[in-house]
Length: 288
Length: 288
Image: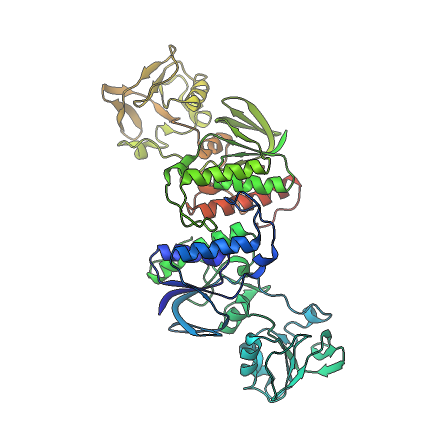
């Protein structure tokens, strides 16, 4: 079992991993891709980088820095995290155990950009199969998404009902699924009264009792929700030591909200690492 | 009058200046030297800098970055700051006016490393001539220091008494002073009962009623004290917007305490800049 698994290879994750490594802890980074940093092509406000740099290049510098310090960087997609006596991080390739986990996966995803989406969150739209699946047992469950994360959520939902519809929202599903109905048209709107009732696609209306959202990669907030960690406005709630309400589960960077700046993410990472080190060594937590 | 003067050219100051410049504010950095960063010869825990770097080299990168963004970097020693309708920053070479000031001068100086020093702080040892000089009018005042900042303090003290002794603590005084007695021997101890009474040097005991400390360059805490800003344990007290109790006077980095790490200083600078921009534009302050 490792000491710490850092999920996310951006500024917050790498900054934390560097500090953790220097505390002589056994730390690994598990990451999928560059996240939002890939969308930035001109960074000139981060101290120490004199000439403007693209987000991709800065991301690459961070990974090079981690590797130079012999921090393993595992390019795997995290599908689930279980808290047992420590944490079990399940990826699309493997399973890793650690005494502590730092969520640093960047901004939590927005949902579908269609009419009715915001309105029905918590009123028939759910981000968490483990949390809410049971409420819809033997009902008609819709799920929107296509990747490994969607299939992970789907497997959870299959415990509750046989009546499941997969919405791919215009994307190819990738795998063949025979057990469930699959709607590949783009979603146009979400409709209902007090609660969600209908997913409208180009080919017509599809009645559902709930729609689970599992698009793309799972975000830190998705994991946090599944594990029972508090979130607020789609940001993970942490204390002054960057720890969630689950002992040993930490979060930093964009996924905890606040200023969406590299400087802030790097600082979060450093402070979270110091707090994690104290946590693992059983010392009293002090304000980082 | 400029919008903002940033005092200090290290990570907090430059980070702030970069953000301020990008807000299209008229900002200048006033700095004396590299401060504590010069003492660090191996930095490998700052995100984005792949190979270990010296503090001096990182400092130079920061200055180059500021200059690339056409931020004036004035190498002048700040001697005093006056809050009028805005701020007047007096240096050893000039005087600058600004609507807001950010103190980012790094760690606040420790005092003399001699027996009795800690014991008599606030009991006959003072860091602020403007604050405490009046309490010792017509008394015997000692002052320890040698540079321009000491002479600045000395000038203030001359308003209160003719009986002044300058202690250079083993350093050359630089200028010739005929008006006051000058003791150039190293200070061995500070003695007294409830309050300081005697400065002991190698050549004997020297009775004083108070000893003002004005060694080296003035620190941010020195300016803060003079202006009536709150300090606590030698750190400047700021609110969540990095503003002191004096409207328009901000502080960030090591001089406000907390984690003494580059990552934290850079983040402080970014957040302070955002708050300063809001302050100058008369917007409601929100938690940065």
